[in-house]
Image: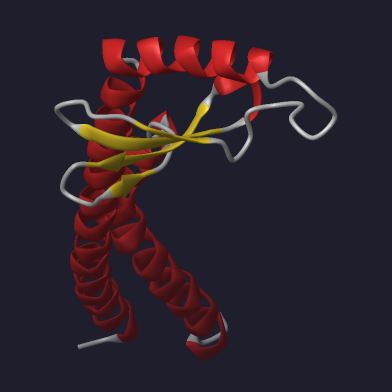
Length: 152
């Protein structure tokens, strides 16, 4: 076996190992992205429910009646409600929902929807896992071959 064939085989072996490692990381990224998507949808569904809309209006009216120098915005204001899913709402600036406590004791916070790059990373990790070690071994083999090759 010569240097060229050995380098090619080593590059393929490390490339496959890198692709497997990239696949493992991609799977972990997929789980994280799917969890974030579910959390975003669940919070969004509850925050836009009719119970929350009604409570937002009642809180707005209540704060307008209490308007004084110490109460300027609803940040941190908590509204206990007795809805089917929601136990308590904590308000943020401009009556945005800062958190929702559910009847089962979970506290949900606004979670951004996963971006397109999160999904792209899932597809790219195995490819990068293959090509980075494969390319590195090929480059090292190419440089080494330049030193080992006999001059003509």
